[in-house]
Amino acid sequence: MPKILVIEDEAAIRRVLIKILSEENDTYQVDEAEDGLAGVDKVKKDDYDLILCDIKMPKMDGVEVLEAVKKIKPEIPMVMISGHGDLDTAVNTMRMGAFDYISKPPDLNRLLNTVRNALDRKELVVENTILKKKVSKKYEMIGESDAIAQIKDIIDKVAPTDARVLITGPNGTGKELVAHWLHQKSERAKGPMIEVNCAAIPSELIESELFGHVKGAFTSAAKDRAGKFEAANGGTIFLDEIGDMSLSAQAKVLRALQESRIQRVGSDKDIKVNVRVIAATNKNLKKEIEDGKFREDLYHRLAVILIKVPALNERREDIPLLINHFAAKIAEEQGTAHKSFSAKAIKLLQDYDWTGNIRELRNVVERLIILGGSEVSEQDVKLFASK
Image (cartoon, rainbow, N blue to C red; front, top):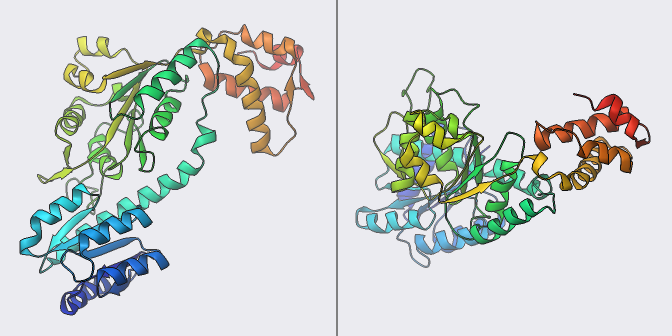
């Protein structure tokens, strides 16, 4: 059950807000605080999914409450409540991290839409936070080859900046690992990292997925929905397989990069976003540009920094390390004893033609662990690793 805290010093406005929220959705649990100090104290002691906070209050104003909450529990979205004279301050609070603002007296539909959107974003951020706890090991970059050392060096130099990065390389090489390391080593590491596989989303839905939509924008749009760019606000969005994105979606992404603003499908309202964009592709985008399938202006916006991830065949010296890493990881996942590989087995695997790259090597290691002997031998590789 979503839990909402209303911080408002005017009792009448407080009652109206609580009444609207309680009557609209009986699954909302609404708590209240009569001033900023009491509100911050409640945030310290309890968990909330959303905070509605007045801007002008005695003891501690809304701007100070926003600053305090962002230090205590930055994942909680805050919607500011502004009087007529507070609009400039309300806009400024959004630059400070507030989700949105509503004006007094509160408009019913505006309030409810804002609350639903803020709760949707909170859910996405929480899911992403849970995933991030597992991210360090999952996205560990294994290898000591010159190619991997060079990539790690570039990451160390680029990550602290907000420069956009385009990651290229064949399928299965680990482009997503580079993206995650860029995020983890950046100033945005405490913010969300939202991944979008552009190749997995139908072209007619990609714009809604990226930018969200308003109710009625298309047949199945039953309610307003925030998109991935909004969910990534303050963090990073990773556009994987961007070479498969439709030209119309490319135009909107270009606008988002140029103006740091988006529009939901079916709406003409601008939404300001603060997002770092990292993109990846296995395609030759310059060839796609020649063929009229990719916008040249978008390419130049994305490719401020280019990182090429090599095929596994180009870094064979890393294969023994990768085998040991996968063997240990698979044993941990399956709850079995760790299996070693003989020197001859490793040498044979180093000589394979890895067209599927690291993803294929991982699958082969798992197969050998399941089907091979107590130590995976050269004979096991010949029997079970054939393609």
